Image 1 (cartoon, rainbow, N blue to C red):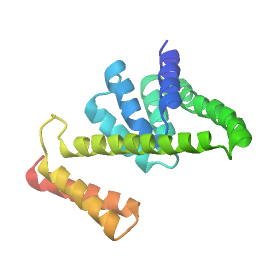
Image 2: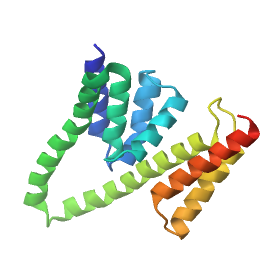
Image 3: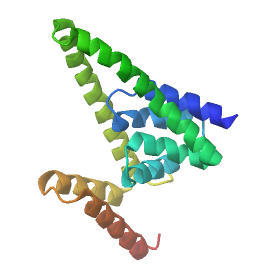
Length: 183
């Protein structure tokens, strides 16, 4: 039953994705493209784009997208519940632990170590997305995509424009490029 598979896969992702949605993206990619070949690499790239553009957290958006694509509304509910349930359980337990030992050195050092792990997970997700952006659907290197991603990154880091405008602009530029190149 696909709904159970979706629930269990996204439960595992939700349980192991420290650091939020972007940190979960490598785990989601592994589950939906390798462990269960539900999506191709190009479809996963589309999933990231759609999940980023729609309102709400990227991880739950990705779970909903995969669930709807595979099993409609029930699939979306199963994947979404699987993704958020571990977080609800873990946060409930950690709130009690934090309340009890919030001033202790062990908790402070543990949180310090976890911060580094979260940065590594987010960096891994970012590099994976950059790799996807730099390659064409056929798996070859695509310089225009890489230049566009690099330009968008620099623009966002230096000028701080609206990310929505940058995304729309990138889409328009690549559309024009595709029309001019006859893609």
